Every structure is written in C-alpha cells, then in structure tokens.
Length: 337
Ligand code: KG4
Ligand code: ZN
Image (cartoon, rainbow, N blue to C red; front, top):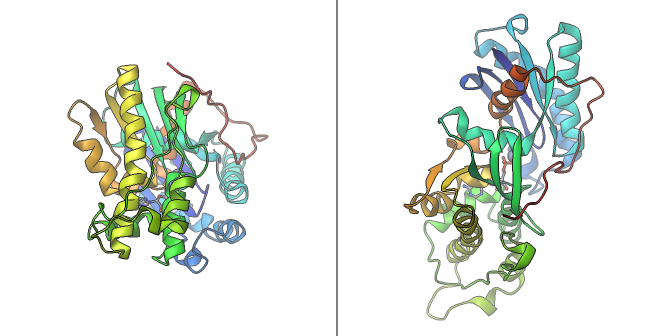
C-alpha cells in the first residue's frame, strides 16, 4: 500500500511517499528556518502563508521522487493536530482537495503519535514501550501500547523542552533554532560552571512531570546566582550547564517511568531527540533497550505521518471531509500506574 503523507503543523512543509508503513520512497522536507530566523522564532502567519505557496510543489516533487504519481497512491495521510492552526489548515485542506478530486481516501493524523511512530520506520519495535516526545511544542513521557494508543505519564507543566532551548538561545543571541546551536556550543563548554536547579516535582500527580520555566528564568535572569567559582562565565559554559540541567531533568523522570512500569524499551522522537547529550545519556543506560529515529526523522517530516497513516488506512479507518484542524493535544488521558 502506497501512502502519501503531508505534514504542515509548524514551519516544516513536508510530503512523503511510504510503502506499507515502512519503506520511505521519498521524504521531501522544505524548511522555513531561513524565513523565521530573522524573528528568532516561528511567526504563525508567515508560516501558514508560506505553506500555501509551497505545499503543491512539495507534494508533487515527493510523488516524482518516489517514482510514482497520484493515480498509484492508495491513501493520503495528513497531520490535523496539534500545531499552529493556520499551518495545519493548509496541509489538511490540500489533502482534502486531493482526496475529493481523486477519490483516494484520506486520514487525519495526530502529530504526537506520528513522532512516536518515527523510529518504527527504521526499526522493528514491539509494543509496549515508553515513548518520549521532546520537541519545540511538546514534552511527553508516555506508555505506548499501540500505534493509536498511548497513556500519558508526564508532561511539562509549562514550557516545552525545545522551547526552553530556543528561548535561552534567543536571549543570548546564539541563533535560531536554538536547540542544535546550544547542543553544538555545549560540546565546547564545561557543564560544571553553573549548577541550575531541578524543580522538585516528584510527588503525587507530578511524579513524571517536568518544568522548564524555572530553568529558563535561572539561565536568563539569575545566571550569577548559580555560577560556580573557578569557572568562566562563558557562553559555551552557559550552554553546557543549561543543556545538562534540561536533559538530566527529563532523563530522571524517564528512568523513573521505566522502572515503575517495568517497561525497559524506550523510543524517543521529536526535534530534541536529535540532541547529543540526550542520546548519550539514554545509550549509557545499559538496562534499557533504546530506539531513536535518524536525525532527519526526529524533526517534523511527512514520512512519519505517511507511515502511521498506513496502519489506520489498512484497518479501514477514513476521515470525513468535515474533519477539522486542532491546535491542542487531545484525547490522551493522563494515567498513573
Ligand atoms: O519536532 P520539531 O521539529 O518541531 C515541533 O514539533 O516542535 O522540534 C523542533 C525543536 C526546536 O525547539 C529545536 O530547537 C529543537 O527541536 N532541536 C534540538 C536539537 N535539534 C532540534 N534541541 C536540542 N538539541 C538538538 N540537537
Ligand atoms: Zn514535531
């Protein structure tokens, strides 16, 4: 079964053709980073307008690259939530138009579930596993029971992890997007230069939650307070110390989620899953079976959307033309083991 995937939830305009939920025939990702760079962040109106200009070309070249055409496509899979509403509307409307004109069925896909599916494009992974989604918009630790079934254990109670990276980078003028830049700067810094606090959210219903707003404030407004004598207050040292605090906070909760549930298989996804410190911390944990998507499949891409869509379409699920786009995470109940 050939599935055409379309992803436009944020600033990546992407289309892909994936065979049987696994074989990537094309994964065309047109990034708007250069456009939003000058604002140090994604400007929603500019993002959606750019999607309207790009989506047709991106879809057509994904079909061409895959050596196919619309007539050979069995289903269309499109992200319809969560994300920037205007951006989502562009991809969703385009998918509906294609479906209506061609008679090919389409299915709306949840972006979080798509990120959790990413690693499965490249690896055989059995359920259940602990899913870790860390991106610019989301930070979620969950038990993943099937492609369409997750139980949320912990989330951020304020900023997303990638958002904290981006805000710290913006404040210090490191560049945009901040995640990769801080990751690279941190390699040259000493993470002992600053001791940033870990919020004590480890009790009751917050056992697996994280919070990045306090860390962001500490790094941006109270930097001197957390400085350790004998270390330079250099930008590289700030980057390294921030990264250590941001990732360690998350890993502690993740390791706890794994040991409390007895599920040692861990699958990561989302832009921050590309982070070198996070990857090495997870890989060093010998008792865990860890899977990451390759770098290109960590950040937003349509291959994960097409791959996940295949499973719904194969089951006979279809979306109607009344399907709307949604900005929020929906349908995942927080559950404590
Ligand atoms: O998944 P994604 O492409 O978009 C969302 O759904 O949010 O993730 C983008 C986020 C940005 O915040 C970016 O700064 C962050 O992922 N990111 C990283 C790295 N590469 C991208 N954060 C930390 N380390 C990286 N290497
Ligand atoms: Zn994403």
